[in-house]
Image (cartoon, rainbow, N blue to C red; front, side, top):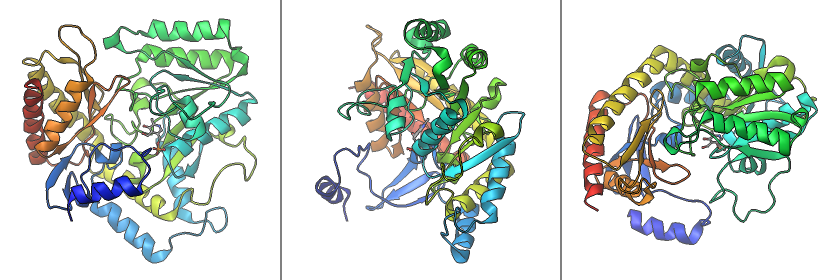
Length: 425
Ligand SMILES: Cc1ncc(COP(=O)(O)O)c(C=O)c1O
């Protein structure tokens, strides 16, 4: 089988609406490497979009899933519950930032976690409005899409968004948008358009993921916390992309010393198996009536078993420390490349959630074309990179945190070559 042949069949069989970054059809994957159906080998710096932080097919995750497969695969927790669902909730209640009693629900995807966090915030406050940020990404369901702060391709043509959703600017230092601008946006919103007493929640990502890897500044996070406290608004932090050691701590919010009321998570939690969760203040989480939350597959036993193993691996292999070490080596490499690459306008990100941004050195305009060339030149040399950003001019690095040193070094060499090749046009 050839990639090109399957690509043709894909065009016939699959909706155009499902976008794609490559036509590399995977045959197998191991830790930080994948092999396609033609036998080509790639280093994977996408990790299924920040999912396999613990590597493809981590042996302990696979062993836990195999043991679960041999026991039972689905009973629906609302019908015939199982103990490891409870113990996983207990672990998340302990791990998620916030020095207060917490409770958890399990769902299946990041978007579903966001939907449920908003439902919980609404029923707990008796209010309906929700504030999100420009450039945010919260998923493709109706509420996720409405909260998302990027029109193309996520919202355009999909009709009316959910009512009572408002957006304010998110700081982007490199584009001269500051925390003061974001706070002024909130103040103006409360003056011009929205009574803060009607707001159920403010939702944000500690580091905007799809939006371009812009970290939330500490003063913004503190300002949001204060506004929430002043007006009885709940703070929802979306850790779907930032969670599970990616930013050098189990959750990105740990480094801010500010506790959200509700935390959404997915991706890295399952190490490659679908599971998502909302964890938050017990009193808030208990606001919904029995049956108001959940779903047939929420907290499916396979995802639960995988997630326990993922948490064990992060702890036993000290992946938070490893994320910091790899991230600082990556940043050093990018700084060295910047010395000979005027197109690099910014290098940023905590832990191993690092991005490089490209702009035209003459006009300082974001350069999506250059960015895409870097991605394609890397791919030609066997390295899978992802782009992101409202302007499409950011390369984000999301390698498994378990990547061996030799593979990491090889990837650094390819990044250097790919940027140099992109400069040649
Ligand atoms: C911050 C954030 N929230 C929500 C989502 C949606 O998650 P899912 O694709 O699992 O629905 C994503 C996915 O990229 C995300 O990065």
